[in-house]
Image (cartoon, rainbow over the protein chains, first blue to last red):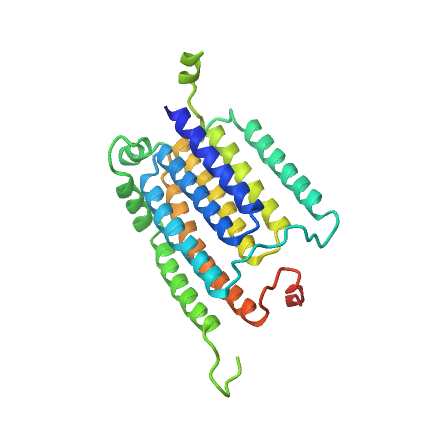
Length: 181
Length: 108
């Protein structure tokens, strides 16, 4: 069963990713991105990260992809790109070669370190329960971690979000008459 | 044979290899495509690959910190998309249909 879920989700992820790269139409690429994000959310559930799977669907598929689609529609760039244009002759083969090389190196590193002994972390009972998914305490464990150990980082993310919103408003508004951008 | 297949459960290594594939696809996409919006989507692919790695290793190592990290990565990714799309909108408003080659003079 677990294998079945993994295979289906992995197929969703990879097909979606290939679709993002190969689809010439930006809307189709965005919809392929949704497929990938859902596949990743399924894998999150399979790894007992229930809360993050929900966040993944809400934030990524719900907000970010919708934002992409808004921009595509607003700017009227919803026409297919010409995939035949290739500025440099060897760009595509070089890109594929670099990608394959990167993949083989990461895969080599993973296979080499596969049997490495995991460092001795003795998780507390609540954390272990959350990671094993035995109790419905995934949210509780994350909340305890975020609001105790990483509370400063959490506060800083709120600052980051405010800065991002202000910056985007400044970027996107049209300059008034007699005002330089 | 079916019993054999049923006995196989995906280990952490499988998840890490899948994440590596997803990351490499994102890298190839960034290098191949010329539409700035698609480049952004490929960056999202890479971020998701890293998130998947974090989740798989959080389970393996019994450390909830991996999941908290993914939470923060998602927040930063959302902020990054907002600012990045704002910049793309500003660029495309001046030069409709601009590709990455047309905005190469941004450097310097």
